[in-house]
Image (cartoon, rainbow, N blue to C red; front, side, top):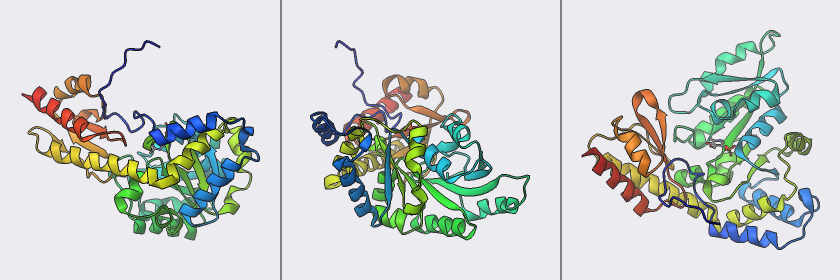
Length: 348
Ligand SMILES: Cc1ncc(COP(=O)(O)O)c(C=O)c1O
């Protein structure tokens, strides 16, 4: 192959990164096998499910899927009838970045709430409760939150529990979009069990791709009875990979020897370094709290396209000149310093 590749690491997203060497090794190991397809009677699936049960300290049911959109959509669709609704922050990936897939697959509605910091509170869900039992309105049945949120913020354990308690009091469920769950656990200094099982989350989209996997996510039902029939939904939803072992092998490597933790620690530390360095630059200011691996900043309008030529990143809010800078497990201090130096040079 003769490809001309760019080697500068940008800050566009944590899925612009490559694959952890340990995960690549696991893929190579899986490639040696002639192995049952679709995960049927596959000892690797059993091993991976056992590992998830250990980290969540409960008999959860785990289903491996290809991507985060698939995990979210299937989790929501599985728990909703077409006349029921999921309540989520307007900024939720489920609402803004899944191309209408949740609406297409559930046939239902997403009821959204404006949440400036990306976090929804029980009192913002409460007004929807007046629809319960009224046949002309969709029936709220699920609350969906993201941890880390799309705004780079974190729910405390107390806040997650309050949402779970509220949902359960109302006969609803709580879904957690954990595309960046490892970054959240590391930032809060808690275990997956403390953040998810012990707070009362019902179903979780467990991310891997943004923290060192090539592809692969897992839908985890913390209450096994809720998982009934999910395998059929996964197949109908086209998320059952025939060579499923390439996903499970990655997760086995990811959950072994705390690889997930090392990767997330690096990404979070680099975001913190980037935030510290940017704060020193005249003309740039941080626009949101830096709580995990995302940094949001406001920059002079004319700087943005010039800097993007050197280090690609996305504009978050055009009217405010706000950009989003994501750090990955493979971001280094040198990448951060190079970016900040480029910003300073271009600002002169
Ligand atoms: C909060 C959140 N959820 C889910 C996803 C998963 O998306 P994908 O379908 O691209 O794997 C992403 C990726 O950007 C995300 O940021």
